[in-house]
Amino acid sequence: MLTEGKGHLIRSGLDTPYMGWLGVRALDAKVSLATAPWRALGALAEACAAFPGGLSLVWDGPSAWITDIPADQRASFLALLSRLPGLHLHFKAPELLEGLEGPVPAWLHGPSAPSGAAGHAWRQGWIGWVPQGPEGWLLPERGRVEEVEEALPAGGLWGEIILPVGALAHLDAVDMIRTVADIQARTERGLSQRMGSGAWPEVFPFHRRRTGWRLALLGGREYALAGGSLDDAATRARHLARELREHLRCPVGLGTCGCPESAAILGHQAMREGLPWRNSLPLPPAQPLFSVGLTADPRDTYALEARAQVPRAFHEVLDHPAVSLLRIPALPSEAAAEAFIRSLSPLPALRWLPPEVPPPGPFLHERPWPQASAYIPVADVSTASQPRLFDDMDWS
Image (cartoon, rainbow, N blue to C red; front, side, top):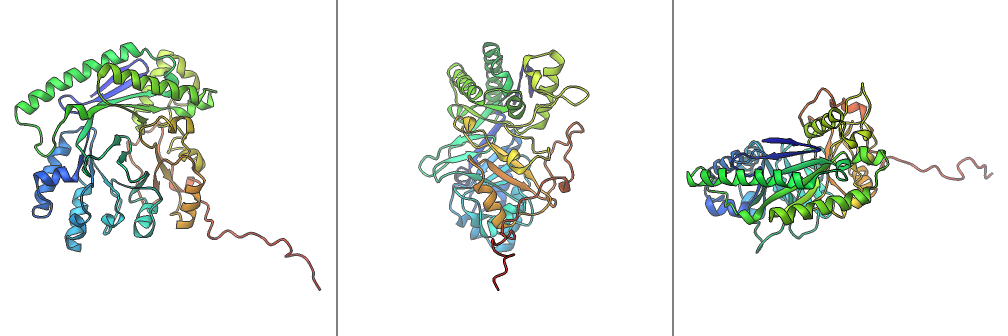
């Protein structure tokens, strides 16, 4: 369900939370992965259908639950798992991704960029990488989740509150909080009826205290180009998240929004209604569209750094890394990818999009994806050479 307010959008469910996440240990407690992996897939598909914004499956169990499966069955299991509608996979062990045969909605979590077979899959655009330490899980565009006794407790989001960075200084927070509270109350009533009728997936243990909201920001590039202070905007975003947390009495995370449809709706609304933050948008006949996230839009053919650099002021207040989708005209080498990563500080959650990987939707005529050949390639430092100083000197 989409609710449009003055300067913000609210995405929520009708009788369920909008998004959810589930640990594989919780799944195995209901349906054993060792003895009935295909039944577990069926139970997981039922859980995915309950969340309109998608479900994240976090592999917090032993690697042997996948690696001990025969190679042919493991490939089939991973293929079916990755094709469940709305499912996102999260791993910390690279060996769990062996046997991939194409792009999957999966993220590998670790302190350094993937190498070896996992690194090859990452550079091919088959998986994404989330930079993080060994503690807890940072789920892109979901939130920060801490483990309890080496297991991930199931949780979710009632919805997302999406707004441009430029609207933070002008937003009527009281009116927005009232709308969010009404939506949450309506959703909770619908969910109670759903659970009372036995229509809630048994594999997902719902806990109200582990269900919250996410404040998602976009239009950071336009705000910065218009001369706005990112430090002030980050402070306002942190204060708004705290205010939401106090009034709603539930967790409220702060992150970025990667939805181009929401960026288009908010851009057209600002120009149509003459809202103050419209001044950073392009003038007609150009389309009044905000960029997703806080940096250059992934559909624009800017330099790689412009599409991957995260403002440090926001990095310090975000609960989870911003996501960067990097369209490139050719696969980067391992050395080139490492050199590019070293040039970034702070690091986003990063996924390459080489020509062999179709770009993600939605496909909008106002801001289409250009051909991969239009993008700037990654500099291949492995083939670069430094001319010697005395090459032209005659020493005879």
